[in-house]
Amino acid sequence: MYTATMIYPIRNEFMEDFVGIWENRVLRLAVGQPGFVRMQLLTREDEAMAIGTWKDKKYAEDFMALGPFKELMEAIGPMLTSDPKPTIWNLATFAG
Image (tube, rainbow, N blue to C red; front, side, top):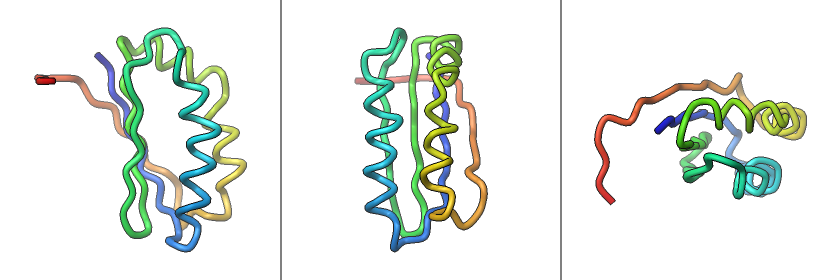
C-alpha cells in the first residue's frame, strides 16, 4: 500500500470552509477511483492533515493527474499561512 499525507497550514477562521472545499474537490473525486483505499482529513487549530491511501503508488499518481491538487490550491490559496507540506509513507504493519 501507498500512503501520502499533506499538511495544510490553514488560518483557523477558514477551517470550516477549507474542510468543505477539500471534501468536494478531493475526497469526492477520489472515492471510486481505481486503487483507492481510504482518505481522511484531520484538523486541529490552524492546521489540517490529509491522508490518502492507495493500493499502489501508480493509482495515487493517476488520481493526481486528474488535477485535484491544482484545483484545491486555486480555491484555498488565501486561506493558507504557508505552502502545504507533502510526505510519503510506506506501510510497515497494519491491523484492522
